[in-house]
Image (cartoon, rainbow, N blue to C red):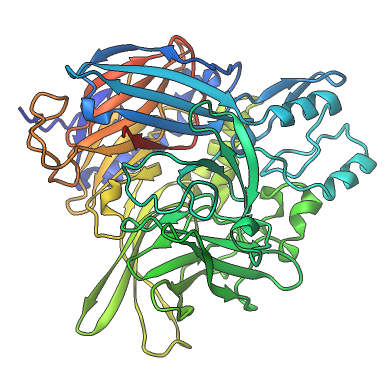
Length: 580
């Protein structure tokens, strides 16, 4: 029986619904929560400090009903430990969440012939060498994303670090069956065996790991795909063609002549082609975390996060965050539209107002009256102040940093999430630099970060977006929200106080099977876009343990869970590989 509509207040726990009529009210309530310091009663330390590697596999306690068709592997990655005891200089404190020591997690979901489901867990540190180096030196001797400078380190050591690239600490995105590298050709079926597994960051390198043991293997670079991809930076979130498995990304060369190279790695042939090379005076080097893909185009949006001195400021500052120039309204977002079908290279450019985004959601295109219009969904911010919200001092309320950031500096204004859809109709004249049109803007907390969709809707017009919202009850994300882009109605899952959910991974119900009674409402196989489940690793911060939460993606109601007796670090991203 379908759940009845429940419009409890925003601060409630459980599953409930809010409508578009509540958007402004809920926005104000989230601000009130921040200003009243409601987050003081929601500790998050257990997700960032004192974390251990669990080689496993460890059997987890399963309750409720986890659908048998979720059988497979949930891979998760992100920061693990944030404090390291050194041999000579006491405790080394990692400054920023993005620089936490890389740790990869694996939830193995197994279904018996009778339909009973078991879940095993294991994890592996990817940054062992980095930890050992920090222990010996007493500090981090490489460029990072946002590590604060240590005032006790001498100028000679700092200068030496200028010439040392970012360390191997790949902790952001898990990608499987990467074309162009070992054992990866022709893996276009989402149900195919995992031939290889990689962890990406926003560098041009990626760490290969063992899909079974999670042990770190080779460090590869974009240049291994194509020697022409010799830049230093890339995109943590590659795009994949949902039909043939091709991988798309960009490579950014910093220095006197800043160059973006947009490329495709073919899943069929393993060959990597450079689709476009862009080096223009008004296209600046920038920190970009994600990109867009439609059926015919791969699209980059260069936001306001321009890097100083043509990118050379990164090694000078020894981190990315401090190398980003101060925000300016004059730095409009620059969009580059590249043909991915017919070899035409850069086919269009347009701009939108200055702003910043971490995560694209989806993109699609429509052709009406001979004109082709592209649509782009992403979670936007007014500027890049949100980067400062993820310093560990802010997340864990140390040294009054939370109050300084969110209240005193009024970051609640600039750090509000906005789900925006921009549209642009391609002109006949390629030389025209037009302006994108804003079609709608849904404010947080009716949307949040780490957005996901049913990946079967990739490059198609989707209706639902799942994300981690901020109601101001925690220093971090505090609930999951399902946003209906048609009605603007939202459904929340909010655990008890101090239960912090991670990214929600959508697993669609298999099509064409009679699955009545196997964990979700309606049993005729996936037809609706939201017919499936969400997998989210939730931290019980007070209990210092985590659990794999399984939600019905239609109703946002819990159907099952698998419980750990220990905390799992609050990470970034993951993927679900179905059993084969």
